[in-house]
Picture 1 (cartoon, rainbow, N blue to C red):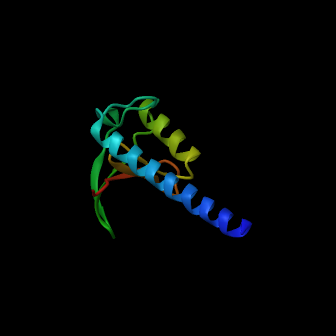
Picture 2 (tube, rainbow, N blue to C red; picture 1 turned 90 degrees about the vertical axis):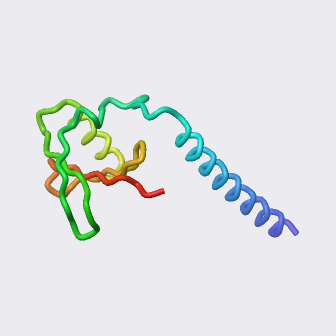
Length: 105
């Protein structure tokens, strides 16, 4: 009996967690596109269009730009990959190049 109760609670917890994440995504999509809480602004970074195995993306090696340095620091704290304001960002193995691609909805 206790095992069934625990299983039910685990399923409810997981369902509420997924619902909460879905609500967060929806609310974020409704809000203004601003860089709240970020130490960097992607609009101030020099991006160049490139094409890779998975299609077109943008890349930057703007290493002397403080906004680029802030982005790199955030990427390092997120294991080299993260999403922010409709873009997926990643760092290349060389540690000085960043790529970004708009996330499909």
